Length: 560
Ligand code: GLC
Image (cartoon, rainbow, N blue to C red):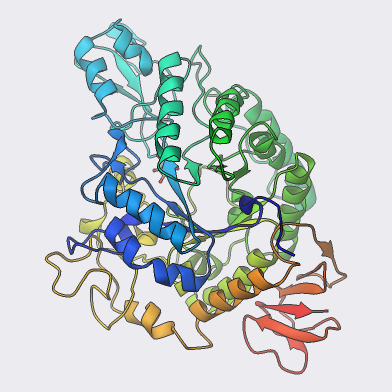
């Protein structure tokens, strides 16, 4: 019987980083035409929806996260008419479309910010953003000690002496969400796109919109609990610190932010057909995350604890248990995510000795090269784990091809603002954004049409051809066919998607759970082979299973 639960409770959502997905017009940058031409691929992969990174008019200081006009498509990506065609064609393929909305800030080229600059200090135009006089002699010091997520201070001074706030790049001034016009404008933007058929939105920096009106300095940073204590004690102390730290952070995850989303929920509910939101909210605890997805708030939120967990059975199990408990308590489904356009691709993470969970808002930048064979083996197992867990899942483009992080991009081609803002100490996020390989043995690997005028906007590695869709299609041992098979089974098996799980008894280092009816998933994160529990058939495995035994770093789906 087909399920009556709304689609977003169990959806597999494919993230399209538009710049790097497919280039239709040959300028070396991905675009809407490229996405449209690849809809049959996405259909055959078996995903339910696309989340498309910002496609709005933008000077591209942060590749589209600096929006100059939320009702226009940037000409680099296409036109509004093409966006409408894409939405319609995707729907014909049974695929939903979720654009990104960026409410924390605009571009410095947005009409509002330009007006604010022109109108000068004390003007009503400046009240839509966060302008303040400086501190210290002559106001020469920033108004407080907040730092930009991309490095350096979160304030920039104007020639007229005032400072403005930007939690990201100086080209991304933060909006003032206390201002009624800001609230009204975004509700109007939501209606504009819902009216054009989008099925929901991914909300950028959803936890950052509301600031403490006093703009106080940051709270003193808690030191992590003694590194020598036993792991469980350390985790407890860390959790307590995280809870204390969040309680009154001046700009992250403030309680008042939920009022905004209650209003957004009402806007979504004005439209037919289960429109939904997913929050990019880096919350310190699962309880704090759950606050975003209460019944009158947003529908789902990315579960970054899963992405930040190391390849460790205990760590993963506690993330899974806490997420299901906290989200379940407010009636929301979990979402699971391994990679996105902001973090190192997971084969490159899992191919390294990660000993600790990394921290929200702190980039994971390990030393030394990864063991990519190991990383890929674990990535295959992780895919089967993720897709078997209750709730929805996100696939970041290229994850289904097993792409590693490109860690040796020449410095001269790096474009992420983090590279400049960090004074060339942090290479930033370009390594997970290299244009996809579709076919062939040389650049552009089918990313751009034959005879394209320009090379891909980031150079593709010499071995990119091995990873191409063409090279993997039909190869039963490939990552792509593993994802296709898993997604096919996920659609067929009533046990998968929304619901609950029951853990099965398993030795240390092995995760095993059952889902009704008649399904089990076993993941071996230990160094020893592990005999599979009794089953009627092996549905799928991340590698060969011989003699009923699961090798280290492998996963299997079983029919019981
Ligand atoms: C989010 C996006 C990231 C962007 C930032 C600023 O974290 O995922 O890519 O740079 O917001 O908008």
